[in-house]
Image 1 (tube, protein in one colour):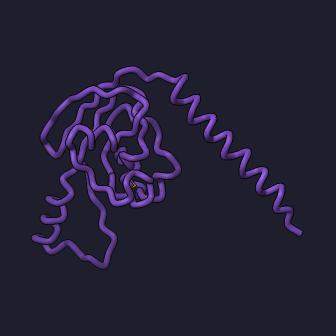
Image 2 (image 1 turned 90 degrees about the vertical axis):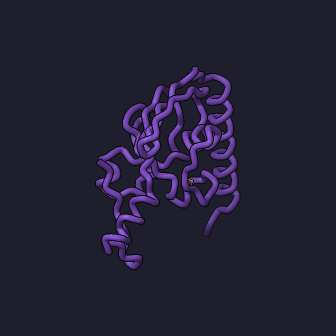
Length: 150
Ligand code: FES
């Protein structure tokens, strides 16, 4: 027999702990000002943000367009960028959207990367890559495709 009261109490405890950790992270941890260096398919720029936010929001606020259909909830897998330094390790929530080669090249989901220090990122020109695949007849819409980052 399932004890629903115990399940509800456990879930409430987990929610309370999660909220407390989120509040503590906001109030107690300061990452200071972080420098973001972006290579947007050859167009380079640098800007500074207050640490603690996520990379997708920082890039979007800067006017840099990143694919996203889930609004940064980590459920679409479209916001891939290559973090070349400062991104830390890939999260389990990102791994399901990355193949081995993407993981090895530092691809991350921008919405899942928390800015904790200076970062360098590369944003591939996905439209140009797909256009090149179509022109060279290597694009098969029925197959999952792989972006090779140099
Ligand atoms: S915006 Fe959808 S996974 Fe990042």
